[in-house]
Image 1 (tube, helix red, strand yellow):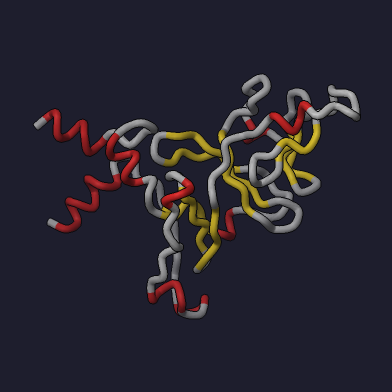
Image 2 (image 1 turned 45 degrees about the vertical axis):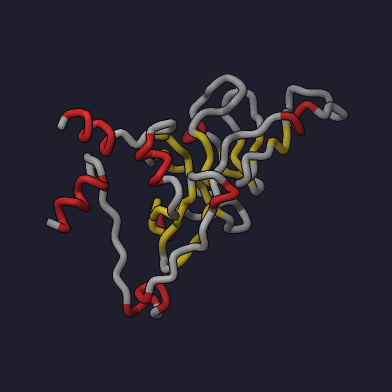
Length: 175
């Protein structure tokens, strides 16, 4: 029915299917797509626009797409000094969404400690960057599938964009 179709195909925040899918680790990018201090990547996962980056030390961060200050797109941020620096006013955020610096505030200001970006837990395994978007207290272990345990030369990973609903496509594959 149309009602069932809407129920299963709406995956954004606050939807039943979106809440269910966020309870699992989901492949986001190939690890090779992010380089340390390289350009951030903007992408959409479960109806949310996100920005992913690899910091100076190699850690991966997945944050909300817009700076919390003036909503500037963080895909244009400078990836430098272990963080993303917003191009608008230079606010600097680490991979956990913590504000590290606000150049327009006095040096002794603690305001930066009150500002955070939404961030998601990330893991890197089998050449894939995985993201968990659900409630932190329900976060499961990263999947441990056999293909993830073989040496890199024994596995081929690839990524493609599917303009549709993953659950409906999986149902079609099962059929």
